[in-house]
Length: 95
Image (cartoon, rainbow, N blue to C red):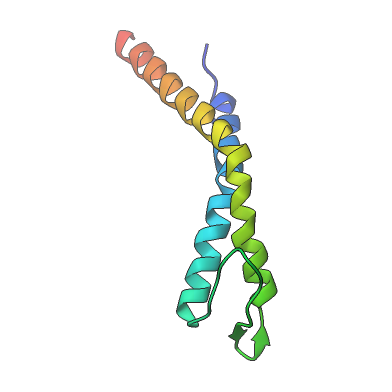
């Protein structure tokens, strides 16, 4: 029988495995908003409200490489969530 904690664990796994992607998106958005140069080569100065956050943004951007390790986890969690959802819907329909 499928329990709620199955969905909870898979959702947490999916969320954690997507963190490197969110890090890249956030660093790119911040760099774009403050018109800073951001790439994987080295940290460029980026002044945000009087503070240089270039090193932090560069680290966040490079953390995107962790997606190579977490992408399989993302796929497995997503696939299992879809399968469990289909099973749950079929069980409800049968009564």
